[in-house]
Length: 362
Image 1 (cartoon, one colour):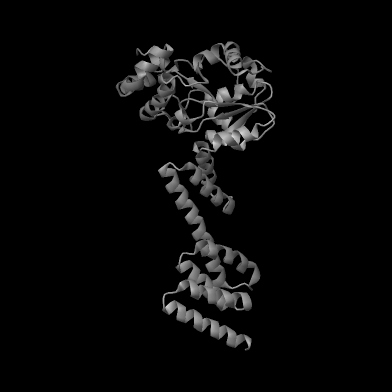
Image 2: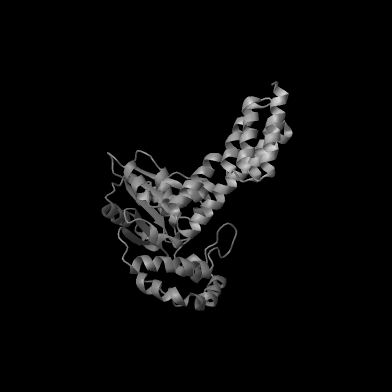
């Protein structure tokens, strides 16, 4: 039997099987054509179409990988290969999202990781991969495996936006044998920070208040709190009142839960103390987390690395001072705004002011 007769015979068998609804058999005959006659692009196209139409996605994806290198360039075949790649990527994305929603973070991490491996430049898969790993059961084990032979101290810096978290991150560079992340990340990123330093420090994301109580106690937390009215009247990225009362209230609910549940390995610092008595509070940090100061906090601006984010968030590195404390009291417009929003802050304002000694009178 010559080549054309064999192809015709196998195609006829595939048609008959498909007509009877036996798609597994049909795919088997088409695969034999592809294996026996690798130059037959039409058979490859038909086989790939059947795989996709029957949602045999992983088989389609593997065949598409081979087809890209085994067959001469063909527009229809390459389009099907692209379709197979996109279908499998969508499968991993949808499965990961459902697993996240169901609280199965180990499964979510598996599928986000698969998507990141397939699409390293995906705009947000890597972020969800880090997040699902942080919430997964395997996260503590990963940290332990990284620490074999050299235990590390991990510290997560957090606090409401416009409270001085970037300043604190810059100050943390003053400790010896310490690496400080230069981006806002989920705490799961500790599993990707495999640097030789003994102390690893990362900084909060904008939504960290939603998961503060889920951070393992082995990771130290430093929460920086600031006068609520200074936070709520702070200008950032061209926005007059960057933190809204609603956002501040949600931040404080997460913070209060930490305090009232007496979260282990937690240090709360007031922004006002850090800018007026930086060296004293550097010692407090050092004592709690067993760190070794290399440069005084009062001189952090001479030592820290200035990044673009620092330039925007802090208007550049400068010596700590108290000029930003209660600035709203000297500005009639800001003071009027504080009086306007004060009733919206009733849930948390009294607790924060009473606990951390802020004057809420206006």
